Length: 404
Image (cartoon, rainbow, N blue to C red; front, side, top):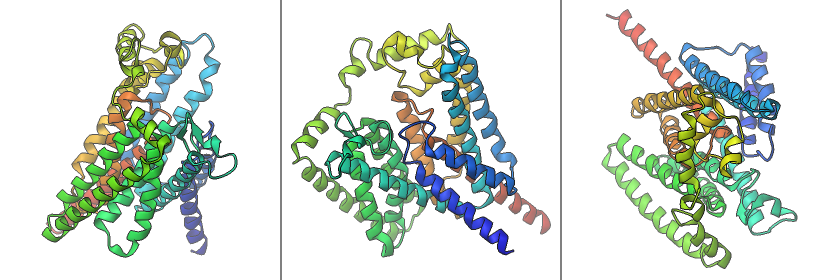
C-alpha cells in the first residue's frame, strides 16, 4: 500500500515537472521531450490504463505523422526531416498520454495546470528581464527587441502564456477571495510577458480567451449575485488594464514597438508575395501534390514558411495529414462544446481548455502550430475529460438500469 502511494506521488510530481518544462523550448528535442520519455515509460510500466474513448485521438495523430513520413520522402534528402517528423509523432503520443493520465484521475488536471502556471511565470519573467536588461546576458531572452523568454520565438511565448492566464482569470472570476492576491500577481506577470512579446496573434488570442472564459462563466451560473460580481470584476479589470497600458506606453521603446505591431495588416502580410498571397498560391500548389512537398520546400519557393496550419499540413503532411488534423480538431471542438455546461468536477478545466484551444485553432490560420507542445497538451487534456465523461455516463446508465 505504501509503495503504491509513493508511486502515485512520484508520478504526480513527474507530471508537474513535465508541465513546467513546457515553458523552456529553446532547441529541439527540448527538455520537455526528454522528461516526457521517462515519465511515459514509468506510467506505462506502472499499469496506465488505456481507454477506448481516447483511441481515436491516437489513431488520428498517428495518421497525421504518417502523412509527414510520406511527405518527407518527396525530398531529395529525406534525412533532413527525420527529427522533425519524429518530434511530430512524439507530440501526438504525448497528447494521447495526457488523455490517459487525466482519464485515470481527474485530480491530475490540477497538477498539470499548476505546473504549467509555474513554468509560464518563470519563462515570462525571463522575457521581462530580457526586455528591461535586468540581468547579465538577458538579451538571449529577446528576439528583434521582443520578449521570447525561454522559447525560440516571441510568437510562441505569448500563446503559451494564454492557458495559465485564462485559468488564473477564471479563478479570479469564480473562486473565493482567499487566493485573489496571488492570482492577480500571477496574472500581472503573465500579461506583461504577453505585452512585451509584441505578438499580434498572442494579443488576439488573449482577448478571445479571456472574453470566452468570462462569457462561459456568466452563462454557466445564473445566480444574480454571481453575475453582479462578474460585472464588477470586469469593470475593475478593464480600468486596471487601461491604466497599466497607459503607464507602459509612457516608455518610448514600448510605445514605438506597440504602435508598429498593433497594425492589423503588416507589409509582409498584404504586400507582393505577402503572407496572404502565399496562402492562396500554396493551396493551389497542394492540388498537384497529394503527398505534400516536404518540410522547408515551401519557404524555398515563396521565401517564407506557410504560417497557416492548414497549408502547413498540406505542404508537409500531405492530404492524409491535412484530413487527419482537420478531423481530430473538429472532433475536439464538437465534443468539448457538447460538455461545456454540464455540472462535473472538471467542468472549469474543460471550459478554460476548450476556449483556449478554439482560440489557438483560429489563430492557426496565420501561424504554424504543428510543433507547439502546449497545443498537443490541450488536445490531451480535453480528450482526457471526454473519457471522464464517458465513464460518468456509463456509471449513470448502470445505476438507472439497477433501479429500473
